Structure formats: structure tokens, C-alpha cells
Image (tube, rainbow, N blue to C red):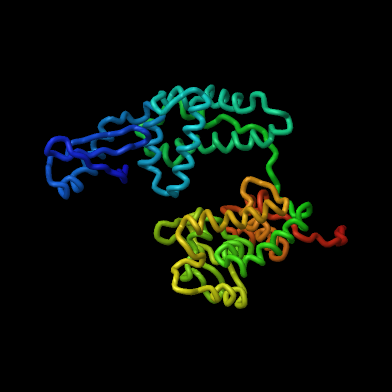
Length: 351
């Protein structure tokens, strides 16, 4: 457990420290009137107090804390997402972080969660709601992943049946190009025009369309990643790739030269602070994509999908998997790689 945010305040002549961990405020005395000493003492005492007041495995809160303590591989963004989904799950069921885990994470509670999510949903909305319900429940189950179960002295009795709850039946959203080729062409034309208007937004568009980078990868991409043969997406400083592995996305020499025209003094390919690189500039591109009639919850992601479809069409599904950084070609095929331009051919039947 790592206490990151500490606040000091005085009571009388002594300094006290407090922190908020998973919604609970913890306060300790540092026992000193020297502020520098207090900063040194506070994190350790707060950590000790939080640990002393925890009862592992007994509540939703402690299950989350166990997940945070022993999950050393997931990105911070992933961990925050899991915690957010756990809170949503509990809220719908009328639970909170102090609810016993053996009550919240059971087969009966999971099924009731599914039923509540689908209650009063119109038939045409059911597939969408079912998919989002499956996403939430899948994330909640991450609290008890196989790797984390190995960190328990004794696996809680309720876990096995909870993890076996089946996902709701819902058709997968298959990415298709045929019904949006004209819209994509219009979006590309308008995004190309950004080069003269806002080259920062244009760079985010270019990296996603021509290298298939995710929004987070676009924001983290550094000039040091750019080689003569492509862009090497890699864990770097605070940034960690989704798979934990590096991948080289090939670019032509002309593409590399075009990007380097914008290499000034900054460290990152896309200029500006993180909020601009991750949010403001990609959102400007996403608005153009939506204005062209391409709907979806992740408009900017449509560029990455179209890149994957083009790679799959020209080089095959396994190249698309490698360049996109997916764990398996099944994911690439299921969610990303349609055929951009299917040519009529005669299939020869071999006798």
C-alpha cells in the first residue's frame, strides 16, 4: 500500500497528518513540532494506521485494498477503472464499501445486478445494456483474478460461485467499413485540413490513422520513439503500454520525414501539456469524426479501427494484431479488422 497524498496541520505545538484512502479519512499525530520531521514521519504512521484498521477479506473496502496491495502488474488507469466499476455495482445493489464482501460478491448478488440493469430496458437497447453490464461485472471479478487468489491465505468461500456467474447474452459489435466508407473519407479529408489550422490536433489524427495508436499512446509518444523504420511504442516513465510489451509500428520513410517536420524543442510528438495531448486535441479530432456521421462512444478510436482494417486487408490479420498490439488475433478479428475493399474472386473448389 502506498500513501501518496498527505496533509499536515497543527494541534497546539505538534503536527498531525491526515490522508484519505478509499473514501475514509485517517489522522495520526507525528509527535513533533518540526515540520520537516513531520513530513518524514507522516507517511509511515499513516500507512501503519490504515493497515491496522483494516480487516482483510471482510468488506468490499478490504477486497479493494487487497486488490491494490497485490496487483503489481495493472496500470493505475486500469486499477481506477476497476474501483469505479465496483462502486457502480455496489450502488445499484444498495451496498457500500463497508458491506461484507461475502454479501456483495455472491452469485445471487451478481444475478440481481444483471436483472436490475436490464429492468425496464427497451428491446432495441437490450444488446447495448447487456454489453455494458458484462463489462462492469467482468471488471468487478478482477478483484478475485486467478493471480490475486494466490495471495490469499484462504480463498473466501463466496468467490468461486461469484466468478462462475455467466455473462449476459449479447451480440458483439463487429467493426464494419462497408457502411461508412464515404463518412470515413470525409472525416479524413477534414482532418487532413487540420495541418494548416492546428498542427497539434493534426498530429494526434496522423498517429492514430497511420500508426493505429491509442489515445493514451498518442499522448505519451515521444520523438525518441520515432525511428527510421517506424514508431516504437514502449513503456516509458509514467506511461505503460496496455500489454506491458513494446511494439514497432512500421512507417514509410516519407511518413517519418513528414512527422519530423514538426520536431521542434519538445520531448513529445504532440505538443502541449498532458491534458492537451490526451484530451483537448484528440477531442477536436473526435468532434470532426462525429460531425461526419460516424457514431459511437469512442469517436477518436475509429481511426485506430480503420487503420487495423487497412492492415488486415493488405497484410492479413496477424500483421494487424501485431501492429495494433493485441493479445490475440481473435480480438483483432472480432472488434477491429473488417475488409476495406473486398474484390470479387472465384473460389476454386479442389476435388
